[in-house]
Image (cartoon, rainbow, N blue to C red; front, side, top):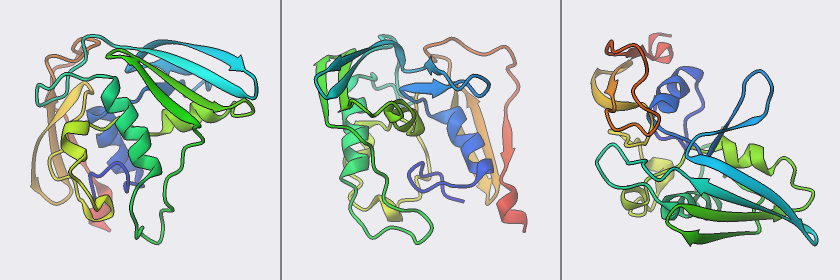
Amino acid sequence: ATLNPILATLPDTWMVLDSIYSRLVRMDPVTGEPLPDLAQSWTNEPIGNELRMTFNLQNNATWHDGEVFTADDVEFTYNYMNDLPGPWPFLRPKPYLDINSIEILNNVTIRITTPLNGYFAIFDIAEWVILPKHLWEGILQPAYFDNPRPVGTGPFMFDKRPEPGLIYLKYFPDYHYGIPGSRELPVFIDYSFLV
């Protein structure tokens, strides 16, 4: 299975990707409410026929390769999603985000404007993991990119993939929310390879 978060559809793959990558916000699986992730807080402000969402980003987040996470990565990710070149695999339509504009206010603040009736825009925003601009801006045909060594800002980082279907992750010591309680080396088995 691919480790490209733009193409991935299998739940087993997303169990791995959600450990490696962070999102701007995450949705609470019980309440359905948005929760902080790379955005530590945000405000919603109706302006005319638009909804202006201003996100205050984590100021201590880094990518697994040591690069600093900034608002540039957020802007890049959402523009990249909307401007992706084709062709696209049959089972996955081109991603689309209902966003009117994205404005970087500073390194840790970004403003996303959506249509006023775009209540569900927060769900679109929460759907996509944030990609590292410094690595993905050179990927011109992402539909054919397997992302063999994914780099994210999440609590786990890619370690190795010794064989198809077996993926080892290790803790990311600089994770912006701190290291989770258990320190065992997680191993993920992608059952899609076993059918």
